[in-house]
Length: 382
Image (cartoon, rainbow, N blue to C red; front, side, top):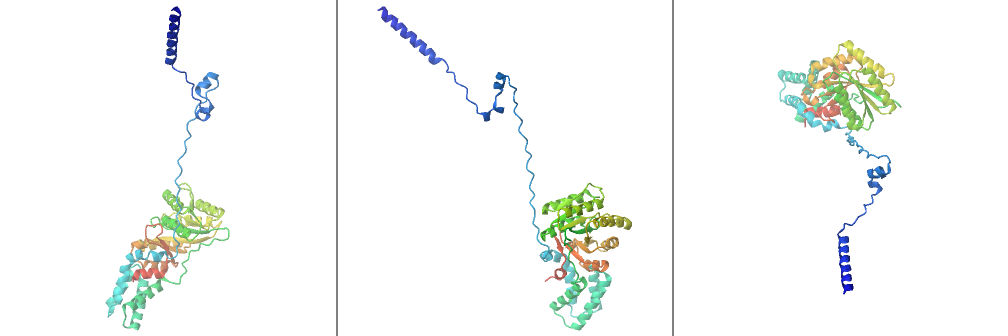
């Protein structure tokens, strides 16, 4: 009986010990860290235990946001631009052409009618002498022709206007490089005529024709001029050389041509200051720029930018510039903003140089090589 009691007591003790064991929390091993999850291959606890120096976690490196990539534009070629812009030109010049066509289509042309024709030509800024000559030539041809159909009148007027504009004048831009030296174009004119914008648009025309171009910001009296050129250059991938505001313009022009030679571009366009100086001031500044440039390369073109809307005032400015530098061609801007297309004839007569380019709007591709026949067709309409 005693044995039974002892065995029962032992069984109870065993059950109690087993229960206690089950109730005790199990010790779990800490998870093994991967080296890549530890700072410097060791945790702060590890270094504290071993006495090794603590390795601090480096702050994340700040990555600069990527610079926005500027898509280089591919401008259309210069050839045929005036034809594509004909509608815009016609809108401004059509009144002039239609008035002449209506007058010449009358059954009877008396003295009053011929006087009205001459006045219309003068009002179009053709100049008094030219207007009188055109009227006399038309009068002679009408007397010979006798009766006139509308088609004959249009052809008659077209011939006369083309003769005054000069269809056979060389209006090409001289942009051929000279061996390892680029062609150099100087652009001159009074501020407000669109001179700097013309430089940028001209760069687009030349890039569209397959040339490499460098723009020299030698109008250092206006910081905005250099900024404008840089914007134009960025859009078509043209290099730009500029200096701080107030720098010597001749120095900028020299550096532009030097960089153009070093980088083997086809054409360098130099934008010059457009302040309306006295004749002496203009002579000194523009003359110096040209002399400095010619130490390295030939100046192939000196393009005078004129605002077609200024009329006689623009002609006075043109004469000053023509006396200062050897102007080789004229750029008429804002021609779509005036009904006085006769300014083309007057400018060429007064300066003895051709109109080579015309501006017909605010768009980047609104500068076009001047084509006399397309111009007259736009004036007379269909």
